[in-house]
Image (tube, rainbow, N blue to C red; front, side):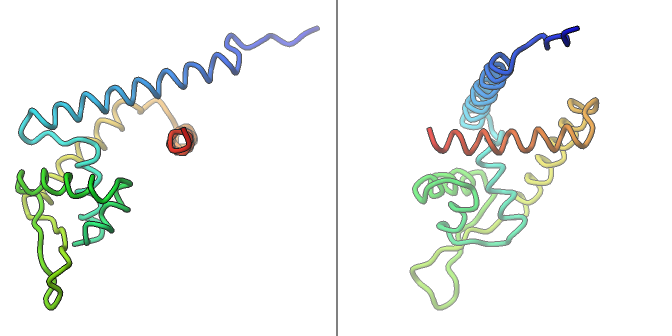
Length: 152
């Protein structure tokens, strides 16, 4: 007696994963578009920067770039947008005229907490039917996808 074959092959499952990754990327692009047109909207990069600053405190732009997985030029542009929104300030450390530290404002900290709470609630609601093991697997898959994209 032969065992039943799964309804999808591994190749089909990997293709579906790739398509889902493209959808995630497209969704991120739409979010970035909204962030440029809608006051208060945050792209994933903006939200990541606010989270890093909330967790670490003020950082030089170079360290913020590393922590947000972007370039120095990208971080400078990111900080410009966050500063224009009133979410961060640029501060010069005492005795160092060349360095600039990026720090959260109270408004930025509030916006970070709002975004984190909204994200946590949305994830909890949308993924309520998945147990912790499935969420751990999804986390691993997303990290692997990020590594693959960095190699492409």
